[in-house]
Image: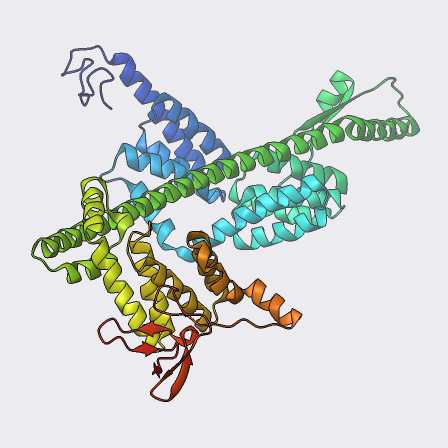
Amino acid sequence: MRCIYCNTPLAAIDYCVGCGADVNLLKRIGRISNLLYNRGLEKAQVRDLSGAISCLKQSLKFNKENIDARNLLGLCYYETGEAVSALTEWVISKNLMPEGNLAEQYIARLQNDKNNLDAINQSIRKYNQSIEYCRQGHEDMAVMQLKKVVSRNPHLVKAQQLLAVLYMKSGEYEKARRLLKKALAIDNTNTTTLRYMTHVEETTGRTSPGRSHRRENDEERQSSGTLRYVSGTETIITPTTFRDSSTVATFINIVLGALLGGAIIWFMAVPALQQQMQHAANRQVTDANQQLSSGTAQLQDLQNQISDYENAVENANQERDEALNQVEQTSQLMAIAAQYVNGEQSAAVDALGRLDEGALKDDAKVLYDSLKSNVGAYMFDQYYTNGTTAYVQGDYALAADQLKAAVEADPDGNQANHYNALYYLAFAYFNLGDSTNADERFNQLIEKYPNSAGEVSGYISANRNAGSASGYSTQGEASMDGGQSGGDVTIIDGGQTWSWSDVAWTDPNTGLHYDMYGNLLG
């Protein structure tokens, strides 16, 4: 033991060598704890496990650090099939004395035997389920579950007791007797088991081997004038109301006494026994539910902690990816700025178009806006040239992509060819069969340049369908002169006849005209 004041190990003297406190009372308490432990050990050796558990609990009340008492209490629990309570005591013991503690071996042996541990867990779950069946009135289901429990964990005394109660209720007293004998073989002084066995013996009128009704001697019976006998734990007293020396009277007295004793047992002892049995069963159910609720709450807390950790990791990874992308885009922006300063406007335009604008923050966003404003004209010209070239070559998908970039590079329409870019973007979608985007660009063109309504409105889906239904068709094709075509004017050039409405693109260097399919006109 240790001093309760300074935690110094106590010596043989009656005062603490560390702080000088009087520890005589503390040592006396320790001796009482050891005495109770020795009594518990003696009871455990003769399989009086209930008495041993009671003594060991009292020993731990006097000295909770009595490692031997706590380990022995765990063994007693384990022997009666209560592995959870046993494991609890051993874990506490190991925490109190981590080194050189037998509890460590007990825990390791229990955990290493996976099959036995699984059987114990299964039996506990089935036992709890059988209790629930009893509460719901499904006693046949409870009997089936308890049979499995007893076969998997034959040392679980509580399961044997509950199954015996169900057998007694259904009138199968011999089955109940066999179960109670097995329970007594494990714990021969368990009061609940003894009470059930007494009820079985009184009901069947047959005493189990080793148990007998005890009658007092005739002298005491004659001197007292009463008939006494002991049945199990019950003492039956039958007073004699009159004396008669005749044989008939004696026989009548015996018969009346037996009838009276039976009536007393039936009307008083049996209801009390049934009430005690019900109370014990309810208490067992309550204990099991409390243990189950505690385990469920602990499991839910652990699951919530795991979920919180997973969310934190996911958020951290997302923040890391965003930070890395921001650094990468900022580095690319600095390289684009260097290209622009060195006069490489074309390369800067291409790189700026591939940049992720959304990843830029603060000063980087300001620099991006400044570069975009300065190279906007270059971007528009480059995208416009690429788009019109692809359009003439019949690559309408590339034309739509490039012309869309050109329009977005000049959102205010400040460039001279903004009309043509928007015009050919609409016809690129039209030639691709993308009516949705084509209609959107045609309407945008009409809204921005109202004079072009008569030229392009016929290509809008709604108008085109209405025209087909009414029997008229639209004429005209896209021209590269900004919509300044000559209408239906016929031009004869080198023997070839064509009109301005056929012109799709005019080469600014050679002045040659091409139709929308890339064919040379004139």
